[in-house]
Length: 157
Figure 1 (cartoon, one colour):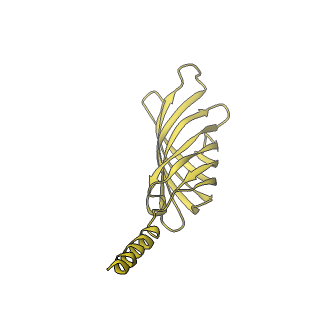
Figure 2 (cartoon, rainbow, N blue to C red; figure 1 turned 135 degrees about the horizontal axis):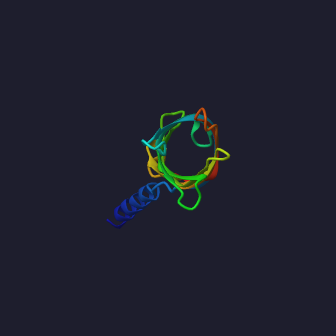
Figure 3 (cartoon, helix red, strand yellow; figure 1 turned 90 degrees about the horizontal axis):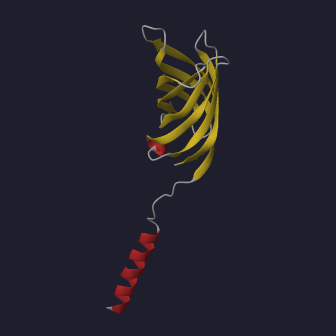
């Protein structure tokens, strides 16, 4: 009976060793792309919100497309700066989605340059529990609504 017990214990132990959960790994994240921002204004001509659509390439996503919504708030201390926040999703080449929040974003209306952070908050497929962030710079044509975007940061999934 002792040998049977030792065999069963050894078998259970070996199976349990092979069942350890996958551990998220922090990886570099780099993104480039182009897109459009359709902006909405209030009755006074102030920017209120916008819808963005973009595409490009990024590490871990491959060729990606992006959709998102952005809310604009005037900076009370500087009339040339517009603060922006919102939610967006990147859809990778294989269909996996990476969800992100747009944080700490500022648009300088004199230059058309915006900076901010994508805060990764999950998604689908391999990005189900993704975390991390990437700082971005957007250079846009304020007349046409087109823009170029680059981002660098880290992602865990």
